[in-house]
Amino acid sequence: MSALPGSFEGTAVTGLDSSPVEARPEVLAQLPPLTVQHEAEAAEVMARYPQARSALLPMLHLVQSVQGYVSPEGVGFCARLLGLTKAEVGAVATFYTMYKRHPTGRHLVSVCTNTLCAVLGGQQIYDAVAADLGIGHDQTAADGSVTLEHAECLAACDYAPVVTVDYEFYDQQDVAGALELVAALRRGEKPPPTRGALLTDFRGVSRQLAGLSQHADAAAERAAVDGPSAGVPTLIGVRLAAERGEQAPAMPAAQPDEPEAGTPTPEAPTPGSTGAERAGDATVAAASNPAEKAGAEQVHTDAPEPAGRQPAERGAEGTDTPPTGTGAGQNSSVEREV
Ligand code: FES
Image 1: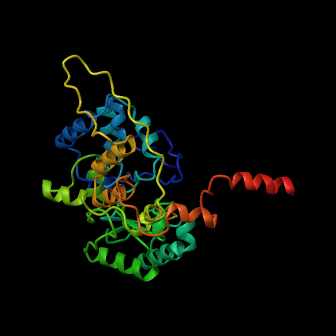
Image 2: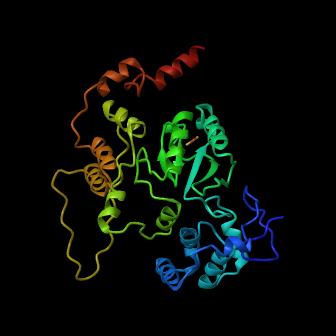
Image 3: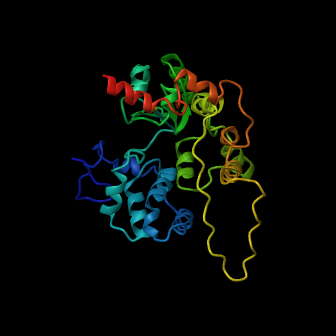
């Protein structure tokens, strides 16, 4: 039976993991305490929501950023500040696999063993890392350096097989690469992820997931946000669409809200610009990183006609939308003949 975190009476059988929550006194005695500073940070998180209880998920990450897992004390902390029962907090904390039941090592290594990664070697990677560390799923190496878990799809199938460390991606791994990655982590190194922000550690990224900065200053924070978040495989679809001259249907022009009295009239659109062009401008302007911006520019209606096959060439080959008068009509006549 598993103890529901923070309660003596319950059992935690929701979710896939029903292992007991760590509550041994000798372990609890070593946890950093949740202090008034953490209460102030929790208040900052709670203030972002119309209803305080909506802040439960980031607050559980805040607890993990301090204690490395959702401890019984952490459940009580959230329940007290949010006006919830411990059972309510425990029900949420035991449902999601990102909330841990035992103190996590300095780094959390997740190996995707879901379909695409598995067929490309994910299971072999997991088995090799587990054997090397001498631990299994959801267990921590004796030196406290690494907690290992197998993970369901990490939403990076185009980079399979993938491993994440503290949720940062290490793409297209193989057994040797993954073993070296784990060995480097155990030596105290932080190998740069394939894309995204630089590696910190599990507690640091938990703080970030709580919606608080894990960086010492604004420049470090900006550098992490500006890290490349997409690579070649993810952009292949965009590039092929640009090469073929394919575009998504234009977004309907937004209907302006009725302006309030005294509100200055918005600037009239540039004469001759279309709704699609304005939508394209807005998408480019809203891009939050260079890769997104490049993708948005590629599909902008102002973009120069790309090299490669032109729309008129495609119809003749019958690989894309057929020219008027063919296609559906032809198929219909074939069907009739058959
Ligand atoms: S199957 Fe591994 S990332 Fe999708």
